[in-house]
Length: 140
Image (cartoon, rainbow, N blue to C red; front, top):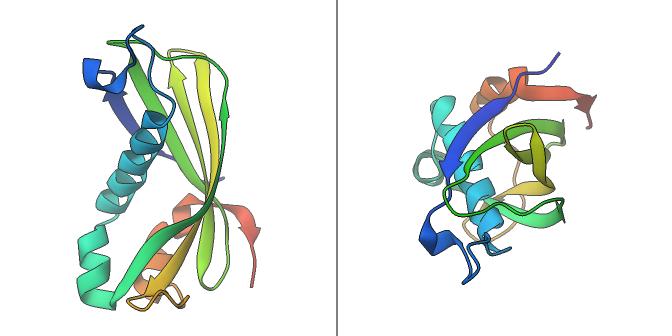
């Protein structure tokens, strides 16, 4: 069984539209923060990956399904896990919930690239740290 990364976020006024509902694009920011925190939790950061491995993690695609609206001062939980992995990329599934209500489901395709934007192999050190968070489907 794979493990999950968890991250909590509170909805502030700046995150909402005039009606107090979270503006749809802000969910992408919440998901990005959760992914960055998942890196921190295994001892890495985007800056460390750039400095130590001369690589970046970029979003190749994002499929997001909005289920319900989050509102001002809601406390949201974001669950993230690695669904599958290849030599140069991985797919992360993320959900945003408020208590037991599902707010957002997202499937993110992330790719490791060099400083010229060309795909590169995921560094072994990062792969091994992420390994407990992989779902069962690992591709070559």
